[in-house]
Image (cartoon, rainbow, N blue to C red; front, side):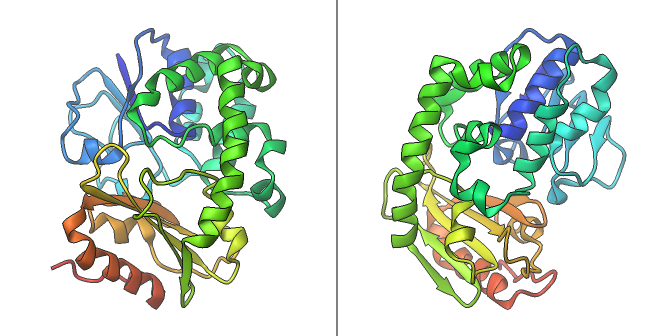
Length: 302
């Protein structure tokens, strides 16, 4: 069997649990949601999909994204939940050879952005949060690191994982990166009504950093939209949208909104990628829906 999942912290934890429960030795296939949705990654009958949209023909499917829900039962487990890892854990709990309860709680907390201001401003004081920030997932060149991290989490506790030389190097880099990112975030973010808009299109490559920081820096905003060119294909514009984790007055269903623009996600957070020539058409419509802040606001893409 083959594990097919997304290269973020939730996906890594899914891979750890599936490898342990099913004793799968082969490498993990790290895939973006759009690759599954558009058929760019071939799925076969032995594949286990986790933290990704459903693909016909897979053996099992585990997901929690609001926009990916199906209208019929699928082998595996789908439910609105803090993380996909939590669903894998629930499904295979009796098959696991180690206690992963703490790791799964961390995946739930981080993927659902259930964080405090203190955690956002100082992630280095919170081991799992810091570790998750070493997984931005934008570059396919990081597959070796993702696989390395899965191996570590299969066998070691969090203190030993953070002491690993490669992980420590990544964590040190993240701490420095977050300091630089805060300055760039302030320089390239503006607010329109209750929407904070970060436009990194003139920065190549686009900077990475603490994805929760914008909500602490711009508390007047109830939602954030970030624009950047895709690291792997500069002809694609990547748009990320998320409800503020502190100012919880945004009512737009982000996942359903972005599904109309070649993306998807949860009610509170999502992303899409589309050819950059559609930016002048799509971006204003996405922004319009966020400013209007109406439940179910879905402007026509035609």
